[in-house]
Length: 239
Image (tube, rainbow, N blue to C red; front, side):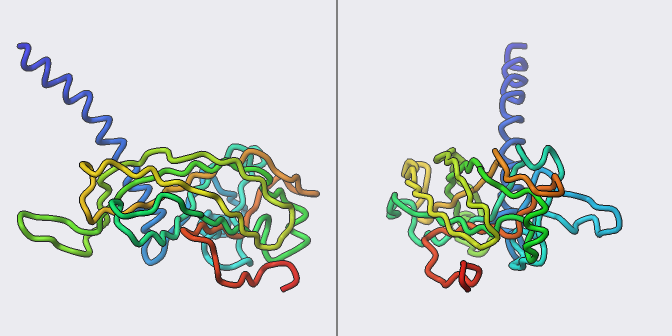
């Protein structure tokens, strides 16, 4: 009888942990590993009569076009959550990785492609960025053989690396914001030599610049890169 009770308790404790891990793995796969390209997700998006249901979807944040925007009308955008893909450029294994990095957020704030609509709609003023760190491997060991190119396997994490409060300028030009990140190198006994670091990013909107006409919050583009951007920014002022 005692053995049955112990077994039930073990099942009760294990099931929530497994369910939580599976939920994160699915979200991580959709955001950072989306095919044919990474995707973005938001806690809500605007559905406007007469337009396609996904016209203002969060994927507009990562489609490379200023003619489309993510928009929401929930609470003027305050409290909404964004998951933005991380363009990982970490090339070393965890055992050899340096700790200090700089990630760069590139944002085109407000409704894109129109100065008039930029002014009429809300824009993001402040966000909280939660940076989660994890270790992954692209290989799968079966017996004595290693099979490459399998779906990425998370072998440690996610753990909360750091939290940052970011304030954005109120203009329609694309801006780069550098954020220092110090990797929390994970225990070697939990990570084999093939493990690599990755980051998972969660943004929460804290405050907005109010639009002159509408209460919809809009953002045209967002991207986060693993190292400081060296490519020219074609959307900078004066370009």
